[in-house]
Structure formats: C-alpha cells, structure tokens
Length: 375
Image (cartoon, rainbow, N blue to C red):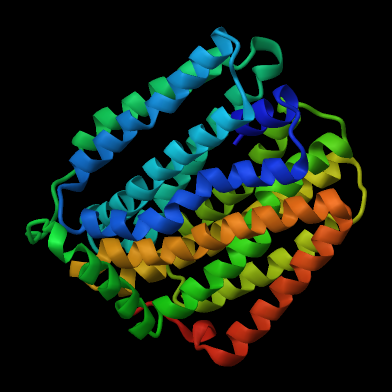
C-alpha cells in the first residue's frame, strides 16, 4: 500500500491513468481465479495451500530487488509484479477465510473482527515501515516484506486442520463446482444482497482509495512516500478502531442495518474530498472513512461466513470477495481516467453519484436492512 505507489508515482513517475491500470494488475487476477481458489480450498488442506502461496509471493519481490540493483526497473515489470501478487491473493483469501470457521468456536463475529484487528494492526506497522522509503530507499523495505511472507508461510502450517472431511480434489469437476458457488450465492437471501453491496464498495470506495488518495496526497499536499504512509495509516487506524469496538460489543444483532449505515456514511465522507482542506483535517476525514469501512468489511464477512453452506464455504466466500475484487479494478480505471482527463473533483462527484444510486437500489429491491444474527 506504500511501496507500490512509491515506486510507480515517485520513482517511475507514471500518469494517473497508467497508475490506475497498474492497480488493476493487482486486482484483476482475482476476477478470473478467486472462485477457482475457493473451489480448491474446499477440496484441499488449506494450511498447505496457504504456505505455498506465501512462498510464491516472495518471488516477484526478489525480481524487483534485482531490477533496482541492475537498473532495469520499469512500468511493465511492476505490472508483472502486480499480476503475480494478484494471483497469490486469489488463492490466499478464500483459504484464509474458510479457516476462520474452524477456529471460531461458535463466535464467528468475534473471530472475524479479531482476525481483522490482527491484519489491520500489522498493516499499520507495515505502512509505518514503508513510510521510511524517503530516507532508507525501497530495497530494505522489500527485504522486510519478503521476510514477513516467509514468517506467514511458517505459521500457516501451524493452523488447525479442517473441521470436516473434504471430498478429494478432482480436476474434472472444477467447472461444475465453480458454477455451484454462484448458484448457492444467488439463492441465499443474505449473501446475495451483501455481495451486491460489495460491488458498490469496489466501484466507489476501493477505486478512490487506490487512485484518488495517492494523487490528492501528492498534488494537493506535495508529499512523497511519507505522505502515502500517513494517509494509509489514518484509514487503517480507523478500520482498526471500529473493529476493536465490534470485538468488545458482541451483542450486535442487526448485521444488515450496521452494514448499510456504515456504507451510507461513506458517501458524504467521499464527497467531502471535493474540497481543499488542511492536511490534518484531510487525515481526520480519512480516519472517519476507515471507521465506516471497518464496519462494512466486518459485517459483510460475518454475514457471509454465517450463512454460507459448510461444504461450499470457500467457494461462496470467494464469490463474495469477487464482487468487490472485480469492481475494484473498474473503479480504479474509471477514477484514474477521470482524474487525468478532467480533475480530482469531477471524479469524486461521479463516484459519489454512483454510490447514491447503489444505496437506493439495495434499499428498495433487497432485504439487506433486515439481515440479523441467527442467534
């Protein structure tokens, strides 16, 4: 979240549209592979799969190290890096999500929020380290990221074994099992509207988070990697804060209402970015945005984990993830091109309007506000 824009915007000085395309390279593989990853997770020992994926993800980092050292770093190489890391994520995410149920002991909301607190907490540490790129350069930080992936591979093996016996993996059945995932999600009165809401998250929020925020940081405030790190940290500190509250407050029953209120609150926050403001106010706005995002992510994952069919959990979770992984690249491309051809302000107006339309359709055409905890 810090090194990628640092290399592309500050070192390679790419245009907004090319930067948006580079962000797509990180997300696009999930469009084609994440349901396959979820299907494989339902049929294999996910601990071993996670270990392998962590180790595979170190390869493009070492390639960047060689490219910097031997002076052949390029935009095309960063696209290749993004594609490999995107492929790794497509297999890691459904495997990790399906393992949460194995360790939840009946408290899925609390397990999801604790997992997110852990994730976002270490993201903040990573962003803080990434902010040192202005002084240290990127090479020590890429080495640190590679080391963290190796540590992740080790602890993947230490996770509990699957709680139920899985059917053996058969390549001939992959297509039908992937189709089953979409059918199960479509038939779910809880997971289907939540998955639709994630399309809005990808288009309006993820696209702006990936593209608009880095360009606001550089064009309005003139910051480098330190600015990227501060802004990213504010967002994820907000996410961490709201999830910490959710972890303590276990008695939330109206999951759909919490999801929709948090998602709706993100639209005026996004709209406020239209106006210039002091940097510290900008950071407070991004913190507030992160607070709402934390609730959206936690409630969405909790609903999907709870109502997914156990034998199809990995696949159904991957379809849910696909909803915003597929719309996120589109949002990034749209934001990058609008910023380049028109302005930051125009992009914010367009994406905010799209968000309002989504909220109205979800409210009028689905039962998303009525989704509750089954307990």
